[in-house]
Image 1 (cartoon, protein in one colour):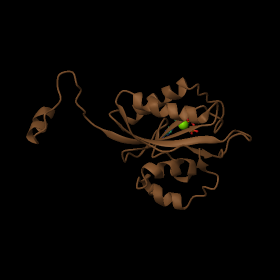
Image 2 (cartoon, helix red, strand yellow; image 1 turned 120 degrees about the vertical axis):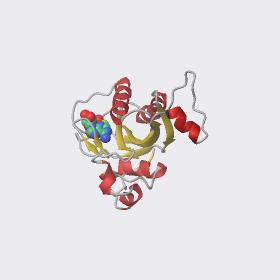
Image 3 (cartoon, protein in one colour; image 1 turned 180 degrees about the horizontal axis):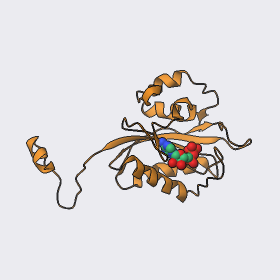
Image 4 (tube, helix red, strand yellow; image 1 turned 180 degrees about the vertical axis):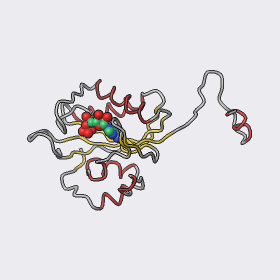
Amino acid sequence: MAGDAAAAVGIEPRVGGLSVVHHLSVAWIALGSNLGQPDQHVRQAFASLADIPGVQLLARSNLYRSAPVGGPPGQADFCNAAAAVATMLSPFELLTAQNAIEAEHGRERVQRNGPRTLDLDIISFDSLRMTTQRLTLPHPRAARRAFVLLPLAEISPALSLGRAGRVIDLCRELDARDMEHW
Ligand code: ADP
Ligand code: MG
């Protein structure tokens, strides 16, 4: 059927071992680390995201340094960045793959907002809205976090975070005094 549809618009479907892309989504991912060598964790995470089967890295932001928000006092500054990916995975499959990358980096969940070797959050997935125990989209806290919005604005200023509005507009309301390039 897919072949017929493709032929109708003059596209030669790829066959013979190559998979047909059934549905491609665009997802926006926030990266953060404040343990070990945070910039190394983030740089390696870009490569690990690109290595997930069914995921292609479309864009990556620069690396930023940000002061920790919440969590225990005295924890180190964070290295933050953002990535855009094209993916054939579902949001849950993507989150599972991201969790595996976090685990490879020795991520431990000891306390809320505590220090972490690597945090990979899905900020937005197509224009999906969902609230489940495991996944909320768009990410519920992204719209008020400078360390998410600034890197994201670099690669997608017009991205809409649902009711919260566009990344570029949210950036104008931010206090980003604590952020600088890594
Ligand atoms: P943090 O909130 O600091 O990122 P965790 O990485 O430990 O802390 O995530 C806490 C929980 O948030 C996880 O159990 C995860 O399933 C859930 N979660 C809900 N929505 C999202 C999302 N959009 N991206 C990533 N994790 C999410
Ligand atoms: Mg997380």
